[in-house]
Length: 320
Image (cartoon, rainbow, N blue to C red):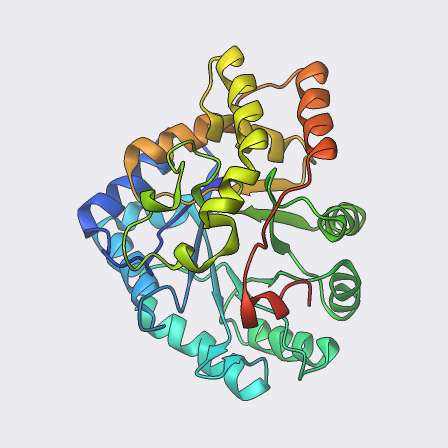
């Protein structure tokens, strides 16, 4: 059984020290019931230079704590290149081999995901390559990230897809989000719901653009511009009021809400610190009443979220 996750965000301007990051992972695994694995999610390009620093950090963790290797389910996104996403057979193999080299045999690669769908490669051809790499024993399961419902169906028809990773939060609940959730449920595919806290906007700790440190990539996102944040304040304030009545944090309320969208959904909050990890995990144990769910859903139906999830070229890669 797999539950919750820790994401070590390796692209921040100030990397998290190993011991702090290790404590975040270790405490999360220790908090889970016996027999439940932590869904540990990383990326082959989560670093300022787009290199494998994030995977190397994960390898150092399992090198220091080898007894935790069997208590985590490791998912790594890759298939990036210097020119964006590249799901050609050659680059998929290169990316997987780079990840395995960075792991240095410290942990089995349970799941590999292309970080986005490559419009230059037919989905069916991509899946054939991913299946071949799996058959060679390089990893156990195949995942897709930011895929549309139609793409998920096409891919699954070639080879079973274990996980579809898409962004889900009160700030990211689009029509296509709902279609992917429904298709995954029908096909018995798990959903890994990344950024359930709206990249930090739904933690309550970011109230204006000045709360972001210099060099933080979120400064480039439209939802972190001052006027857009103020436009979305009605939503955040209303959610915070519900959380306060329930005596939980705003972030925990959002994690709970994402989990209530389907029993096949694994909320994927990022964390680099023990305190945040434990708080996030507790969000998955919160029960929401039908009245609370109705209040949240009514709020979201009445107030359109302003701003885009991503900007520029990144936006074009969504729902591939």
